[in-house]
Amino acid sequence: MLGIARTGIQVTLASVARGNGLRQLCSGGSGSYKNILVEKKGDKSQVGFVRLNRPKALNSLCDDLLRELNVAFREFDADPSVKAIVLTGSSKAFAAGADIKEMQPKTYSTVFGTNFINDWTEMLRIRKPIIAAVNGYALGGGCELAMMCDIIYAGDSAKFAQPEIRLGTIPGAGGTQRLPRAVGKSKAMEMCLTGDMITAKEAESAGLVSKVVPADKLEAAALDLAERISRMSLMAIYAAKESVNAAYEAPLSQGLLLERRLFHASFGTRDRSEGMSAFTEKRAAEFKDE
Ligand code: CO8
Image (cartoon, rainbow, N blue to C red; front, side):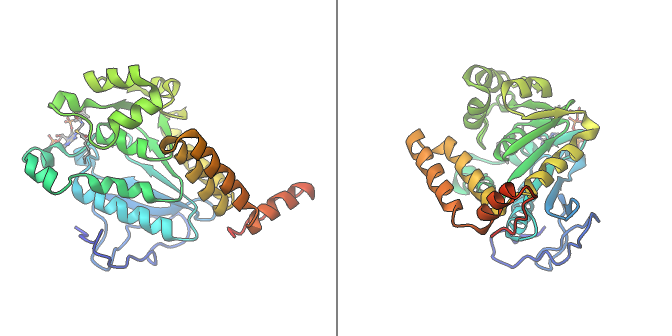
């Protein structure tokens, strides 16, 4: 295992070639990722593409996988050529939850003492948009992981659930908080109290998912979305993500003020000037992320 997530060892993207060739990144020279596959995709290689890759355990989220995921996200966030990230799994499972076998022997003092799963919040500091492309199961921590992303696209066979109650516990990575904000209290309560799965279509009509596509078209659809976002100015992408996220954290008055100030600040960017000039001159804007 990498064992580098919080050791401060520099991780390099040098091993990622331009183009669509799949690479398993070497991290800190200590070896490849074991639980994820990472590459750059899209015409201009502007999309960071991460695939959860623990097929034998249906992509259940063990500690090592989460450490690797945090490293990969941080690398893409720091890479100026990448402007959006897609996170996906396999056709059978986006992620079937936290690794139950790894959790089973833990005690209260272990999980409290080590602040178990606190590492999950690291991905909330990623400034570039993360699109979850969900095929198959997104259960427990898998559903929570998808909800920590910025946009969720689902294949038509995807299934979402918070089944922790069937294990005698409750969601621990945001399920009881983000799910009600996405689907409303009644449906979230029903899901958390029964562990029942909902289909992709139900998830879309409840507001958890923004688009459902045929399962075999999911990755292309998520990639297309990421590429369309990547054509925008990175300055505006950062501002839009930060402002929309404030809607979940701040009172309306503060969220509106942040939005106004970020809007004002965009007038200090070269790309805002270019975008409006391009409109008036009836040509395509050429953003430089400045
Ligand atoms: N953890 C560990 N192993 C798993 C998990 C899991 N969550 N899910 C599946 N696997 C393993 C199975 O044990 C099996 O392994 P093996 O072949 O060695 O027996 C393999 O994956 C294939 O699974 P199944 O044979 O069960 O496949 P099926 O197609 O029959 O069933 C299901 C698929 C319905 C997805 C079923 O595997 C299942 O119910 N899985 C558990 C789902 C679940 O309860 N998830 C919630 C886990 S708790 C949680 O996420 C808490 C989050 C708290 C914060 C996050 C902390 C990191």
